[in-house]
Amino acid sequence: MELNSFVLGMLTIVGITLVILVVVGMVKISKQKDQITELWNGLNNVHSNTDQWVSKLEETMGRNMDELKREYSSYVDSRFDKLQSKLNDK
Image 1 (cartoon, rainbow, N blue to C red):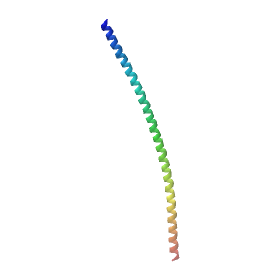
Image 2: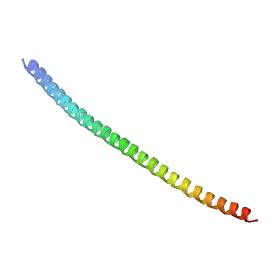
Image 3: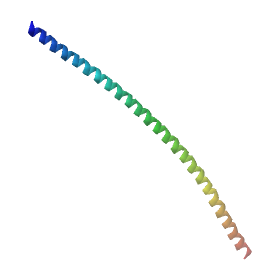
Image 4: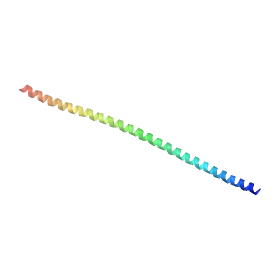
């Protein structure tokens, strides 16, 4: 009877320890799952912000290029007109 009581006590302690370890493991897994979800959300935010920034940059650069084309075209046109007028005067 003593041996049976000892064995049952040890099995109870092992069982309780096993249950505690399973619960702690489940809690850690749950926390890691939440962290992974937060990381994915952060990555999605960074991706969308980067896309918006690139779009704005492309738009700004396009406008700047158009302005430069107009400036240089008008400059070249004015120089060409001056050259043409000088040649016509001679």
